[in-house]
Image 1: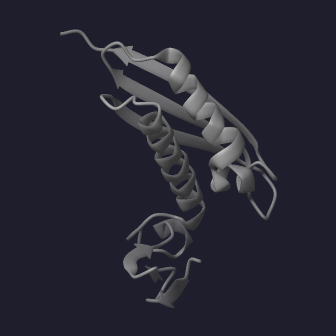
Image 2 (image 1 turned 120 degrees about the vertical axis):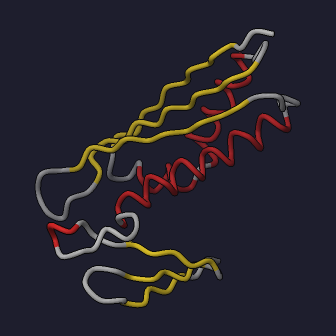
Length: 140
């Protein structure tokens, strides 16, 4: 079970204590913030790529795929009307390495997106989720 606490620091700034880890969230200056930390909605994207990234590396480890690099990014489109929520989110998985097994990578990503990632499951209730896999083969 997770636990989070937000302590107001003035303006739109809050110090977050999440499971014993502290960080700042804030708003942009044009809305009264001081731009001291990430925006709350964008942390949803961070949660998504962290969740699915952890799934994918764990699944690939079980498949004995270990020698690779992975960068996961996400971009979300917001609705025009309030409350502004993500209407769509695209996740990009970029793998780097030598002789990477395409089929295992595709299976790991699909399992994460469709079965294991709880953040994907939550977001899929209100947004269209899609993903793309890019494999950059490195040479000796």
